[in-house]
Length: 232
Image (cartoon, rainbow, N blue to C red; front, side):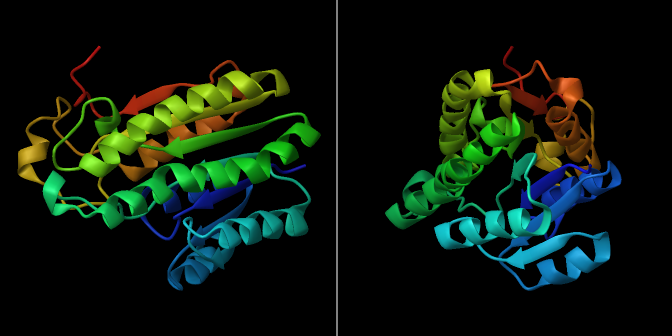
């Protein structure tokens, strides 16, 4: 029986790469993104899809229902997010911060409320959230992302502790700069490996963490950043 995975914000970049990696590993994959292009991406890579936003509870409910109606189970979830507002602290509005909270924490919380009972009924499941290296080495370029994804680290630790007994695992992947964005020479000089990461490298780490090969790994924040993080 093929495993079934949900991947959000999967129309491009790391989300799309994760969906392709999982399909190539034998998963049935259901993808979602806000734009209509997600439907074309689904045809291209051989996934099921719906158009919707991770900040809309009704859309996440519909996504989970689609997976269950189509395949009768969900084994894995990749919570990826699209654009998060960035800028100087006091250039960012209260609305920007609330939007960031909905994207980074709210969407994960909503998804987990829905899939956790499914995982429990099936005897287990696995979740990976795409975070950022800046969660634990804050960058002034991404204050909302850095602050709220640090909070996401605490969130998954609490969740991991509670549901480990049910064979449910959850981890964060913390990418550095990846090739879904144009190369910025200022950032490039700070990367010990001297290059941006490939979205496929992030996807392979996600696939590993979702697999039985990572069956003793939960509640962790895994850096995939080319060494840019200086803290130990």
